[in-house]
Length: 362
Ligand SMILES: *Cc1c(COP(=O)(O)O)cnc(C)c1O
Image (cartoon, rainbow, N blue to C red; front, side, top):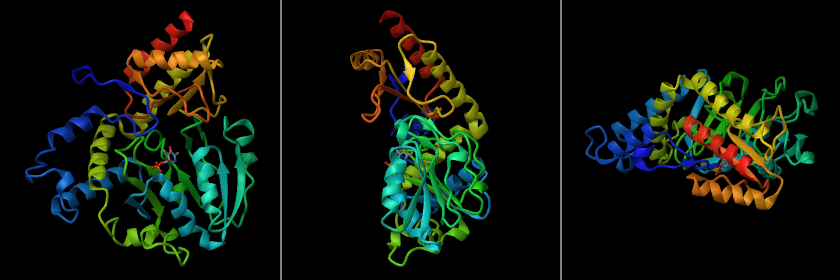
C-alpha cells in the first residue's frame, strides 16, 4: 500500500479494488497483449475482446460453481436496473410475487415491482429500523408467487441473511450486490442472482445476472428490448456494446480471488476481518453495533457511540488518521466500515487499533 500512498478506503461502493488487479490494468493500459491499444479502445466484436469476455465468464462460472442450466449475463443499468427487470421478466407467470423488505434497496425493489403485478410483503424488518433479518418461520410465503425476492446483504443497515430462504417450488431471486463472492453460494438453489459490480467485483458500470435458463422468455409484452433477459441470453450479453472495461477488470479481480483460495478462501478471510471488528466494538465502552447479533453483516459493519457529537469526532479523527468513508449512511447515522473482499486485513487491523485508542481516550 505504502508504495502508492494509498489509504484504507471503507467506502460502501464504489470501493477498493485489489492492488494486483489495478497494477495489471495499469501495465496493460497502453497496449493490451500486443494489440496496440487498451481494452477501453477495443471493438467489442474483436477477437481480443471476445477472449477476455469468454475467459471472464468462464472464471466466474468456475469460482461460483454456476450449473450448466444457468446463464451468466454482463449487463448495465446497475443493480437498480434489476429492480425493474426482475418483475418485467418473471412476474408474468402468476402476476404475483413475494418480497422480503429488509433494507433500503429491498424497499426500492419492492416499490418498483408494484408497477407490474400484485406484490406481497412476505416479511419486513422495518419495525425495528431494519436491524435484523427475519427468521424462516417469520416468512409469510404465498404458494402462488412467481418468485420470492430478497436482498442478501443490506449495505446501508449492515445486516446479512445467514440462511437461504426455503420457498418450495417458488424460485428465489436475490440481490447479492454487496456480498457476492464473499461466501459460498449454492447457485442451484436460486432462480436468479444479480449484483452491481462496484462492491466486490469491478468498477461501477457492470451488473452481473445469473439466471436459470427456463425462467427467461416469459416477459410481460411491453418489456423494453434492452430489459428482456432473453434478448441478452440470445446474444450472450452482446446485443449492444457491453461494459467492456468493467468486464476486463472483473477478470483481473477474479484472478486475484483465485489466489485467495477462491470463494471458500475469501469466505474465511472476510469472516476473520468482520469478527475482529465486531469483537473490538463489543468489548469497547463507547461503541455498539447497530445490527442485532445473528443478523450482522460481514461486509458492512455499522456501529455508533449513541452520541452524535462523539460520532462526528470519531469520523473527523479517522480521516486524519488515514481512513476514508467511515461515516454511516444518513438513514442509520453513526459509522459504517465497509470491508469488502479487497479491503486488506491490515486495513481492518489498523481500524481496530484506532477504535481501541478512541475508546480509551474519550
Ligand atoms: C449498491 C447496491 C445497490 C444499488 O446498486 P447500483 O448499481 O448503484 O444500482 C442495490 N442493492 C444493493 C444490495 C447494493 O448494495
